[in-house]
Image 1 (cartoon, rainbow, N blue to C red):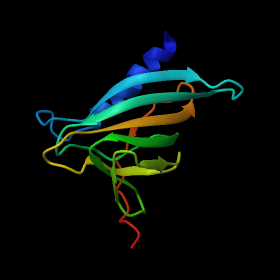
Image 2 (image 1 turned 30 degrees about the horizontal axis):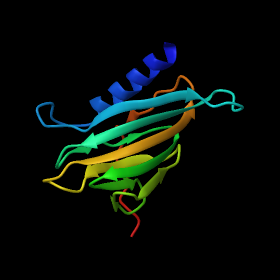
Image 3 (image 1 turned 180 degrees about the horizontal axis):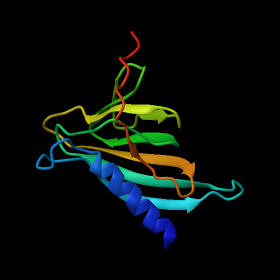
Image 4 (image 1 turned 180 degrees about the vertical axis):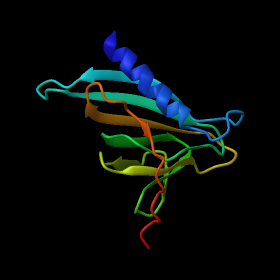
Length: 141
C-alpha cells in the first residue's frame, strides 16, 4: 500500500506541473506498474502512460531517475536542457538521465492527441517528478 501511495503522490506531482493554466487541458498520467527491483537494494521501476491532448505541454521538471520514453501514439517534442529538441513519432524512444532537466515535453500536434509510455528506474521513496523553478539553458547549437 505504501508503494502505491508514493506512486499516486508522484503522479499528482507530474499532473500539477503539467499545465500553466488550470482551465487549459493538461497531459494526464496513468499508473501502469510500480515494483521494487530484485537484487538492486533501494531501487524500483515505475511505469506510467502519459496522454497529451492536442497542443498541451508539461512545465520544466526533472525525474532524479533513469527515464526511458516510448511513443505509443501521435508525436511529441522532447528536450533536455542543453540539447536540441527532438520530435518523436510512434515507435520512437527518448532517454533522460537522473541529472537532466526535462525542459520540453509536449504534443507536437494542435489537432491530434499523443501518448507515451515512461519507464523510470529510481530510488524507492523519492518522487517520480519534481518541478523545476530555475531557468532552463538554451539548447546546444
